[in-house]
Length: 165
Image (tube, rainbow, N blue to C red; front, side):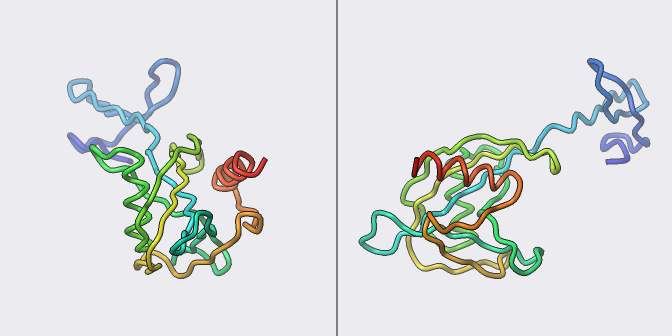
């Protein structure tokens, strides 16, 4: 953000509570860009085929990512939406799967993108139909999930260590 969204003045750095923030230089306007973290839901999707109680883990590749890079299903929390509902919605929107259960894994911080990650384990069934955001998916037995980078790796490791101590 370079300009005030209220009065269009170029933002300047000002200090509030001993921390630098971008702010409007017009004291009457008073806009401050607090740069609060954005809430994102992430889902470890356990794909259940009919009659199964334990499934395989679905990892997907976003079309913007290079070949071979896989990750979790994720999306932004929308205004007025419960995080559990957002996780189920994202799974359905991106994979076509319907959530049967949604349980919290934990909260994580992804500083590179200034995001708070709300991670869930989503058991889901149905027919896998990827939306336009995703290029491919792969299914893994929990013991065969590949090592994942950064915050998603921490999420997966936490879930696996609790599920399979």
